[in-house]
Length: 295
Image (cartoon, rainbow, N blue to C red; front, top):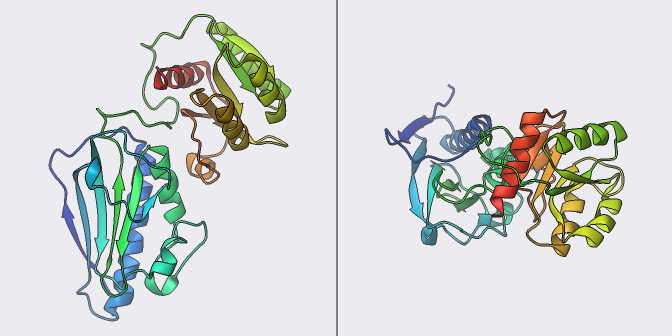
């Protein structure tokens, strides 16, 4: 007889508000609940006594567990965070498996863990939060996601266009370093940026971008960089530019979906992601978001 774990939800009528991409959050919750359900089914072994509990509330930054927390470089910037918890009464997770849980394609099928969790971590990073795991064999598991509240610090990474920035004035004649190895795309980007009264320095590769940035970092206010390039890609370019100037705002442009982009994320994150091909309004929003994030 199929096992149907019970679902308990503790969701306030008017919950905490976060600035988020609805699709990403939906997939995040679906993956966590699916994994919890599979873990409960394995442990239940034929009965329906297992429980998956979903809770939503707020937590003081000081109370975010510091033991197993990802990303490793997460440091709370706000005093209070939203907290989404998905807990189960399943078998639990051995300590040796915790560090592998969020690797792409990793799975410990007999306890129903691993599949889809790399997507979860990508969404967590994208929203400027963290995720913690508390578990041990025989005692179930608790996954908690802590995104910033909407009134707190703005997420360091957001998809351009999710929040209108038309009311934000771009810095007149600010200089943008545009990096793209496709001359046609780069040419169109130059025209768009100049139509926004921006000055443009062009680079056809990550290597050229680094060389130009070393010479002009005092005047460059923002970097718009393609993600997929021959030689150094966007993530590598971003990391090196931040070594030269830690607070330089960076926008990564890509034709891939958000989750695939975030699978390559490193220690340094951009201020915005821009979907390709992009339109003028989306470009303006991305540049405004990037500049506002460092003011």
